[in-house]
Length: 232
Image 1: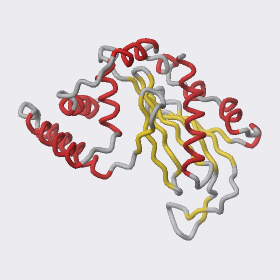
Image 2: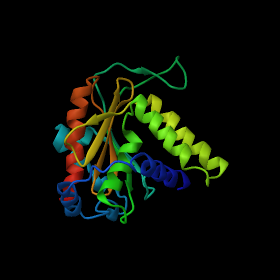
Image 3: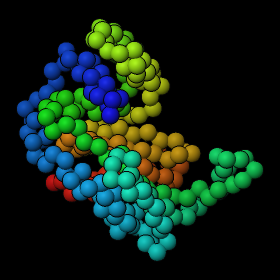
Image 4: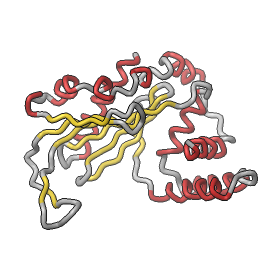
């Protein structure tokens, strides 16, 4: 929780001189019930059911395996997996073992920003977590962070420094016109993650159905829309 507070602080510092909030954005933000998804008690199978996944991807339910972690928090999840036509992969444990490269779809990472935050602050906090910053923006973030850490502990200062350093190798790509904001990353080995902001909440769709990044993104967006439609 301490790191999350520091992240909020960093976002406020970086966006302090920016005033991009518009009336239309405030209106759209107000239309979504706050904590709409988290009010479902972090039931990830309810957020994205096997029936919904099967409908989007045209699957036979009987061939899909369901695995879930029911933690009732952002670290809970549900994954649906089924056999693919891709060759087996080397095991992460040993190169001498092969494991099936199954297709999979999952949802996790549901988290809500404070209901007291304005639309602009929610968006700023979300985007500071995933946005790829330019060199000039990284320097500005570093400069502003240093100027506002005089009352922080050594541990907090080190954490803030780590946040800035971590942004230099970020792999997320901005996806325009989806949710309030969304970001995507993909690799042939691990598949893709689409993280989306709706109202004051964010969640991630994880997907691997092929080696094609665009195909995975298209399906991830359809699955994410299924989740967001629960709030509309």
